[in-house]
Amino acid sequence: MISPWDLLTSDIMRFPLIIAVLMGVTAPIVGTYLVQKRLSLLGDGLGHVALTGVALGWLVGAWLQTTPADALAVPGALLASLVGALLIEFVREVGHTSRDVAMAILFYGGIAGGVVIIQLAGGTSTSLMGYLFGSLATVTSTDVVISVVLAVVVLAVGVGGSRLLFAVTSDEEFARASGLPVRAVNVLIALIAALTVTLAMRIIGALMVSALMIVPVAAAQTMVVGFSRTMRTAMMLGVLCSLGGLVLTAYVDLPPGGVIVLIAIGFYVIGLAVQAVRERLGGRRGTADPADPADPALVPETSDAGASARA
Image (cartoon, rainbow, N blue to C red; front, side, top):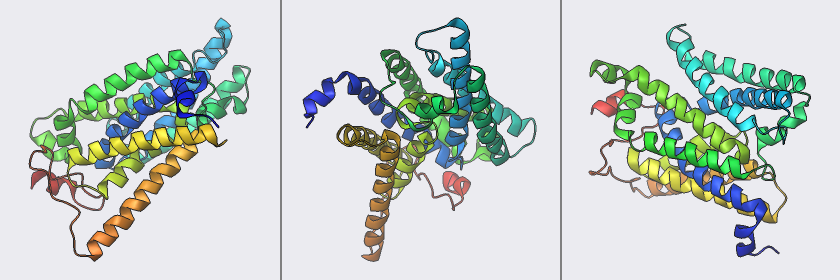
């Protein structure tokens, strides 16, 4: 059996473990804002667009005869995700198209573009499997460098600009009336979501990266009250899910992305059960943190976020 030390020093696991920590920290940060904006499926749309970028990177690599053939896949995915993030905001505001329609276009266009372009690049749809569902064997030192840079940017924006981002995501109309740059913030959130998709794609896969953004946040909502508390708890859960799933797949031959998502769902179910018991016993989930500038907090999706933000 592999010892924990051998696991940490293994050439196959060292790089994925670093990326797992980074994506576990950053994905819930972005997810907290997406849940607040009722945009839980944005990560899925961007994940599909990233597949087109992977295929484009593969095609350019074939023209340049790079080694390995998919050396430009991650940069291509990053570029495509950023462009997709900008397009969804452009289509929604300029084209007066609702977000769900714009994301549906991203879903279908991203998959279709990826399958067609990868064929032009001389590959097959199976060449995309590692990017669809995640793969440990393909992670390189270059991927780690890219992931560190992306994680720093997401942390700087998501944590450093939390007050502004919360003000806009909780109530756009109130923020606009207050003179805040609503459009710029919406674009910024979409862009850091695109960065997070690219960061996590290698390990968890483009089809499931959105789950790591959203499920830890949903689980955190069952445990704590307060925007900052929710974000911190979700980040902790994200790291536990990422590392736990990766370590488990080192001992059992299972896809890392699926295991990570199932662990996250397990935390959510546990949180619901604890919350139900607490409510049955007449307890409260918790109180708002007076030191939390964003309380009252991340509200459930069925409630009026704007009213909560102005209360």
